[in-house]
Image (tube, rainbow, N blue to C red; front, side, top):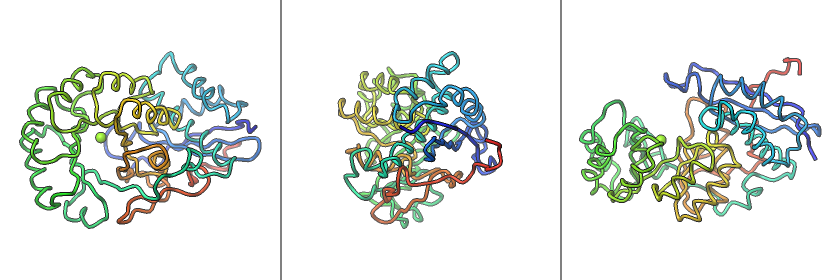
Length: 343
Ligand SMILES: [Mg+2]
């Protein structure tokens, strides 16, 4: 059984990240080495917090463990970070290590991640784009949907105007979503949902802060538009609270934040149990596509993060959607780890 001999985390070029929290606490690459020469890769959120946690605390705790003991590795990271962690940055850091462990385990079996998860049910996943510069250009790229991100202090009125423009350009049959980014309160979200009720929105995303599960539950009951959320939920336990409250129509775990593949697999299982769709945040990168293809019944993938192309893996998007990676593991290698660091 392969044992872990090294774990490293590096943060790529900060200059391309959006000028907000993601500049410092954005995506990080993880590399894991084993005693039989296998190398696995993963991606985390969490920036400098993640590189510090992975290169010190997690490395010390995980060296020598067998990679096939995936749950033990996950629980060990959770345990050693629990005094400051259990959510947010610490679970982001855990996510990338977990992905690298899954990558190693699939590579050890010479299997693609989709096959490792039981096999892709379809070869392509339809894609949608978030916040396109132009609706007409977006329409020409082979995607099936457009998501409008609510910026600044945009009111329901201005968002409805954007939806009207989008619908006029894209036509019926094209999916339109709205992402509020946790910025509204219940009354604002309810008012918007009434104004936008006739525009056939695919979903209303993160209208409220993620801790307001009761607000989500009430909104879902009062609103005709499907309610999506979970991009900022951490661990399966948080997703379970939303599902048990019947507060969401669509859950949107980010595999590089929520706890990795270990958590995502459990979210897919629970969502099935509760009859809820799963549409992972940034699902068009190599980390999420295999799970959507193998575990999902709702097949739609958001575009990858554009500012960290070296972490998203090679991808192909055409009129049929995103191609499922077919190389071993997640089918990608990350070339950011210096050889001369003495390890
Ligand atoms: Mg979002």
